[in-house]
Length: 305
Ligand SMILES: [Zn+2]
Image 1 (cartoon, rainbow, N blue to C red):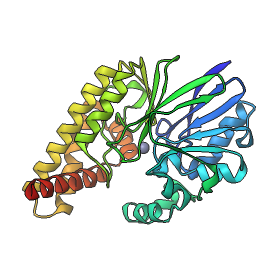
Image 2: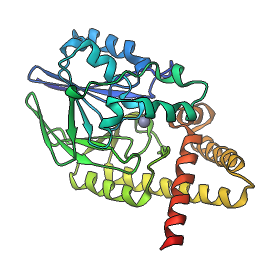
Image 3: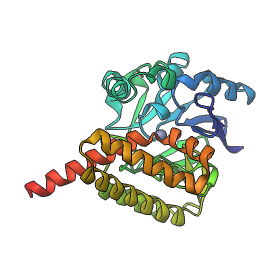
């Protein structure tokens, strides 16, 4: 038996925000991106409804270490000390010791960190399986190829199931809820790079998946078209960020203008309710901060070249 199941973590009571993938094959059970600790109870309920428990999981595969993807890893290991947690080399230190990750998250969400993400526990070093990209993992009868796909984060990897033609891309190809009409960039600080991102698109397309699995949220069809449209939106948002930074008196005002304009654009395409859900899932202000940082770094590099 080989199964892939979407688990809707119903993040802060919002369905279709964060999707985990449960991979079962030949008695092996793995989860790609277990989500934040705040939805750990929901994850456990999903497992129970399938006759499973955290203790029966064999592996957790992280696309990257942001709290909405990876925060529950430490809690899973506490309950299941034999659990293997796969993570990219550059992300590993922050999974072993999340204090810096949590300190920067506390700056980004000063009032809502705990409500959004719960309590992020460290993962003991012995549980980690360090990835660089290029590995092929054997999970029961399933083979998963790992590719290094930075852009959204410098330590981001994607997982490819060649037999099923599915690419588990985390946040590398943006946010698109239920294959909907709008693809939205998520560009939080500190690692955004449009140039590096391009190589990751190529790495995904080279493997010719027929579907993408997005953490936010679910499957997207026609990967080539999806990525073309995502690239267009990403560059459009970078230009929008540059434009509001030029025309605003300070970064706080620029952020406000960026969020208002991005929201208006989304409302036009999606209607108010869906636009609000997309904006919540993505964090528009974070996306602005990430793009502003990227533009600043790029300008500095150009000035010193
Ligand atoms: Zn995410």
